[in-house]
Picture 1 (cartoon, helix red, strand yellow):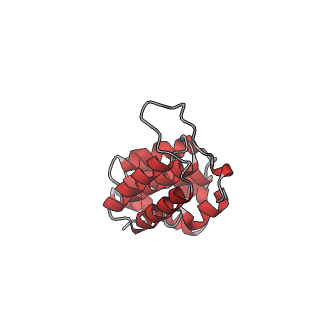
Picture 2 (tube, one colour; picture 1 turned 90 degrees about the vertical axis):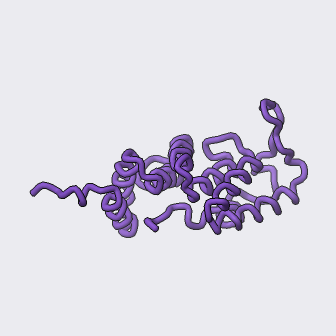
Picture 3 (tube, one colour; picture 1 turned 45 degrees about the horizontal axis):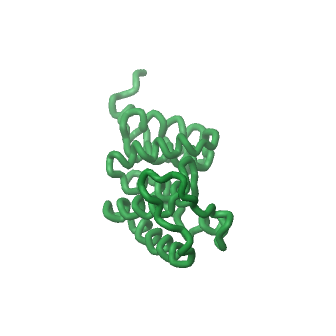
Length: 173
């Protein structure tokens, strides 16, 4: 029998992906999210970015993660801005820039993300502890930025909650 139009709707595809996610069948979840992302779903675009960021159901690929987060953020999806903040904060697929991360977190907060508010406070505390990290001037890429490996906070500590990974993969509201 032919699938109904409802079966092929974006919401149905996302619900199917979430079922696969819950069953830890990440390769199947990724395929569904990718289909919905290609159809323009901001939620699915965010989740495809997440899959690339963490290698769930696909190879880890930071550049592709940023690409999909940017597509989702272009639709004002708060989670995508939060995830872009995470990428900028850690240098995943982009040049590490704590101030750009702060801008992304602020956009996410403006769109209603409570996690982004936590991330804003955390990154402000981090920057207060590291005054050597100066805001880069526009069009001056030669300004060095302190790599995370040279700071007192390890990438693992940052990833485990100081600056953001809660709820980066999101369900349908």
